[in-house]
Image (cartoon, rainbow, N blue to C red):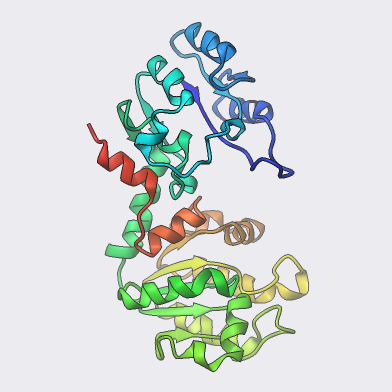
Length: 304
């Protein structure tokens, strides 16, 4: 198996090689993983040609390749040196990077036109569970959002307009915006439940917690996408803790996703209490809004 992956973006603090990643993979799968500090040069090709059955190679950070992050079609990416050099050495391509499925990058879509290509098990599970929330989950369906205003308004409108969500609960900075701005409340009157009080605008207040918990208790399916406040600080954690626990213990089908959401779930020790916790951020949001995901579109288009 040849593993390709990325870490960080050029110029950022977390843009590193993948040597330590190979060590972590070894610990998880309890197999030897050969890290090669090359991507498609002579060293990488020589190591791949020496592979025996059962060998595993991790190539270096694909974002070191100039064309990796170019926004091109799968057909255009397939003409890159990266794909042209490595594809003859592979039997098939498996994409299991759901969290990056919204990006049309070279390593994600470039091999799909030229190799038999498949969705990995994680990709399959993500599509299944998010698809269930959108299409098959029992009603009433309640979507709970926190975080920033800019990230979520479009999604809330989309979920309500498409009749996916029966109710939308809003906390966090987004909730504060609804608390202050009457025009925002008119997006879908009767469908949106927003805060009625707050703790220094950094957490939802007691009255709001009671209202949110009541709505959650009526739901048969719940999506969670964002904390209720600045949960990293203990004095502003209560709203997030109470609402997350109410969802986790609701008995409903529960789906959660997003970086801050997952961090809060882990901090509260609730990972095993949710039906599914998604690895996706931007990819999950696009999926929820009914927008295309380039990786999935490519897998469908070039299905053999």
